Length: 464
Ligand code: SF4
Ligand code: SF4
Image (tube, rainbow, N blue to C red; front, side, top):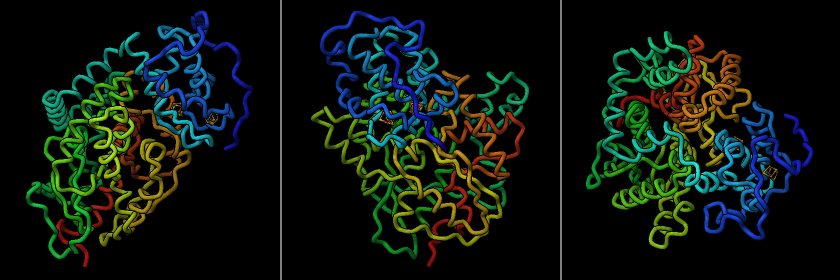
């Protein structure tokens, strides 16, 4: 894709509502998260290489909705030229997906994701968090509430009503029901993947699959709140694939939400509290490695070291957890993905989650997983590196921009004539699945690990 070179940022931002305060010498926001992250701003040389990678810039065509424009706004906030309470400026940060495609495109190594979270955390005491986001974050913070909410969602999903309502209601109301419907195990699985018991191996009973070579690391799965609530079939498939590769596994009690939604919304204290609980839980296991099959959660666990870097009691423990974390495809590809034996005759395209491709820089391993499935026809997806518009709860709080970002993704998927879109993140899974459902497409979504698991024989029967 050609890279449009742009004029340097104009001296004033384009938002007509921007309120410019009198400039103050030095930093106008001392002691704030943005001030603490400010060194990252200095790396930006305003080259504009990030612009064509940015979905909000591509769709909204406003420099203030580009990475470069937002970095300039951050600098102006720090310099006191713009007030924190300026709603016009804040909207440009609200509209950012946090997809971090700009980080991959940036030749200067600007840590955009950290700067965005720091900016939102700095703005939060002044402008708060949208009500919808508050409700979601509260539920995800409290384990009992979350389990009840997910149990309710499963019960509603089991009635089949979400699929019906998604077709009857206006799009804005239909979308959440379509997302829920899209989380159900897809029809392609029928007859291919027999129900399998979850790996329920306790800490004291690390299990080696019969016939497997034992010296591989002991692994434990981050069960994930949405993954364990709505995608148990993917967690089962992951346990099956790990066992087939000979990994000994153990279960980790006391896991909590990873805190990604909180960090992205600027609730860094909420994210840190959840991170501490997870660190303590995973320290109690016998596992060498923590395996994650949800890209957003994996990216968050890998950032715990940064999240708690200035907490002397937790920083080393957080770094240790981050260094033990692996995306499931990353783990499998490092040792070589074992080829399946049961042909899966489906035409499949792969949409890499932003938090796998851009935040974790795990690019090739998911393809290696899919290439190990016999009979599977893997077709490339144009602009696969562009966000789908899910971005945590972005599709709930910024539905118009989310729709605008999703539309070209659905068009590119249709161009592939694939039967299945493979993606390794529950948010992307439900966003793309909902979009496909509402557009009347017959294409469904699956996790790459589901497809690989379906090509393996019975659970606990490792290949010789
Ligand atoms: S963020 Fe990176 S790519 Fe974008 S303008 Fe700055 S230096 Fe260039
Ligand atoms: S995180 Fe994504 S949406 Fe936000 S500025 Fe970067 S590329 Fe654009």
